[in-house]
Image (cartoon, rainbow, N blue to C red):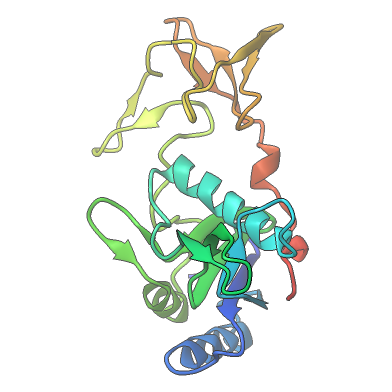
Length: 227
């Protein structure tokens, strides 16, 4: 099935550990690009561990991780694992510090410049691995028009149940429907200053998401660090 929008896959990998099975996955992605099932493949390297600090020299990696976390929260899935945090102790100064441990390989998929998927990730029932999605891409599955997880909230704010039927927005409260933080009401639009959610107050008193795209969903693919 032909992609309806441009599919860009960014492959993050620990270098120089391009060994089996990681190397074979990267080669499979390159083959997908050559075959046209991926419009563009970008390979980026990152370190095994990144210090969770404003002074870290790998701020781009931390920003990428934050972007993944926001995506996972919106889809009600988890990226822990493959990402995890731990406390490390310096052998020189005995200083204890929190570090982010990165996966050997991680994929982020963009439809045009919109982040639509991150792999690996887990739901309550299963874990979708990078091997899984690479196999689906090679089979020509359209990851752009058919999100593997499914969109939990439509652009018009109507939620869909397991049967596909639309249901009304949930009753309104002071909290953001996405992150729970307090919303700000401004001239007919309610916004969340924390996560950027934008909506309106529905007739039944609930909140309805607008079709306005959130800035956090439109980070340019080219901004992914090349380290």
